[in-house]
Length: 66
Image (cartoon, rainbow, N blue to C red):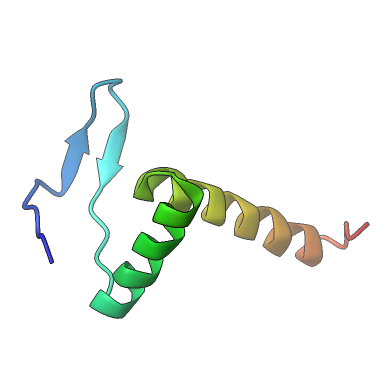
């Protein structure tokens, strides 16, 4: 497994600030398989998954299930 060392807060080329996130190796491997299957980067895959979970969580909480 390749490990890259980077500062805790990092800005990418577009100037968007990023935070470091650590996961266990099994979770990382699962994410890698999802990314390869969907042909997306890890950050794009995580962004989509988090946005979907956020929408679901707060739609259910606020009673907006349709």
